[in-house]
Length: 66
Image 1: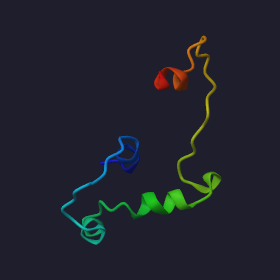
Image 2: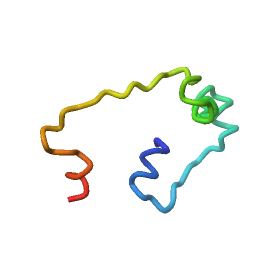
Image 3: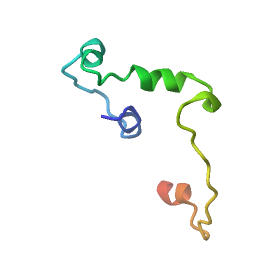
Image 4: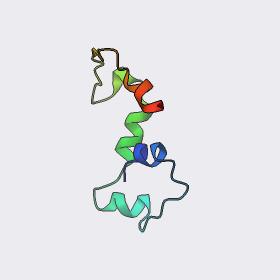
């Protein structure tokens, strides 16, 4: 499960079956993900590009709060 989704959905508990070490042994580890997050944005392998949008009077954050 995506860590962001866990926090955004306000979960209080998450159950898992395998440790990070067991996960890494299969080549599916999340270490790379956490290492990337620790880097300054300009040094990450994937660059996020902000794109301005025209919400035409309907700011999505305002709609979300309503």
